[in-house]
Image 1 (cartoon, helix red, strand yellow):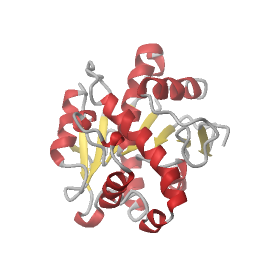
Image 2 (spheres, rainbow, N blue to C red):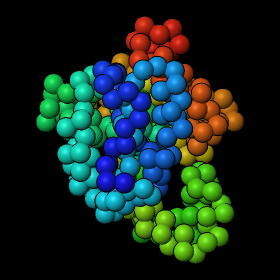
Image 3 (cartoon, one colour):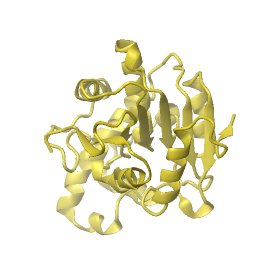
Image 4 (cartoon, one colour):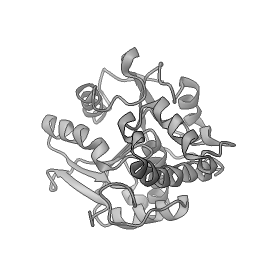
Length: 254
């Protein structure tokens, strides 16, 4: 795909959501959720296809600064005022640093809200060097969190293909974990599961070191785990739509 951000929904609608997938995932990873949201409200959704991942014509990127710059350059020309940035897992970290760059470079286009789903605070990868590990260790971790179907790991050609993508993503997260940032003031909604095998409540609460704004939470059912976007897409879509209205009674303000 030549476009980095794939358009879904009503492009002329003033409500705009930018969506970022999880580690190793492509834009298709959040497509079913995007379609579910579009079925509920008129909205302009732009789904990010990470460079070098499935469906992208861009070269693979393993540098955090270059990745955020690339997203920024491709998004800023189509970004609307008062947009909402959504990210699942790693996608939340990417959404945060992109929002920060937009706020610095184009303050008039600072996103109105952020939505982080199963997203640990960026420093959770500090002192972890998964990008340097052997394929076996990397895919053991991927199996544990359920990011990739197990049948893919039985195909050596696919293992070699996805290993480079996973290493690049891990390297980006490792770099970002070392960055000291000033807090940004953008209302943020967290969707989480207390039985998530990757993202604990503690790692989510650490986001308070990165945010100086109103935050709210929604707890997914206990069996949701970490990768719940497809199984619980209706629930997640409902909560996202509710968050578009700050007066929603379904939010638990903190």
